[in-house]
Image 1 (tube, rainbow, N blue to C red):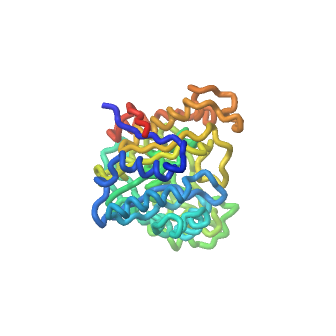
Image 2 (cartoon, rainbow, N blue to C red):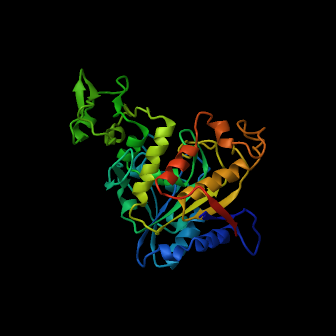
Image 3 (spheres, rainbow, N blue to C red):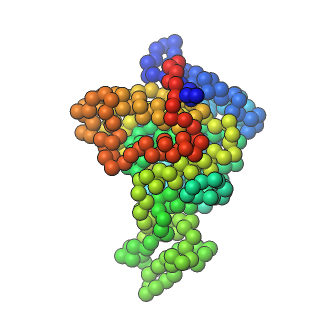
Length: 368
């Protein structure tokens, strides 16, 4: 049976604006049955790196927040710290960036909780029946929330081809340890030219992996457990990720993290994709390049696989944007994401997610 994916185009008028359409989408996916009375509701989004402008606008989140509160839930906006250095690599910097990007309480109506804690190590190890992982590290506040509403900006991504609901949940709900396990099969390494020998990593690590050798830090691979905390704690940015995972393996790992994130949610999870300002690259960059197609619309479903399949199909059905050098000459029906990320087969994540029982690629698109 095909999963239903509800679709709102971007037409609006004085009787029905886009915020009204977001409210209608929430009703179509039966949000009331997803919310427990006085239950904690994690609204998972991407706040955008400083300088990025393609993320979902805070005013749309306000409509979601208000409806959750009307239903008796306790909503909070949430994301996790990043594995790489940037303006969201710890909870304090992340909160500052979120507010600078407009996600203040006065706009969104909800508090912000960085789900994996101050330095990305507040997590829960969740057992799963995966083929790669038997246990995944999920951000504490997301795992213990009663419900999950994932609000995703649909865009391109250099490892997954496109970044949709599956990436927002699989990568975005992982702790720092979980992100490292998806991106790399190796532990972090020290860039000796940058290391000043301060010993901060040695003092911090609970496993004794960092050692001082000739006045510089060295991470012993025999004792490193891959938690990734040293990456965040190094004041010089000298500890780096070994990005060695190929795109297909990364996508499968990411899908298994979706499995862990949703394991305790049951029917208390819904997904929205904003197929607007479809930038070629992730919102983790400090800029947003010209969109690859024109704005398409907003989708909602209770099936994370179907909503991503529908979103990518809708994007590829559009002509390439004349303002984007990657896609300006591409007609409707061509693969816009492969035009940007030529070596990435984005279908891997969808096929594996369906195989793992997370949803169906077959869908019925229902316009509202």
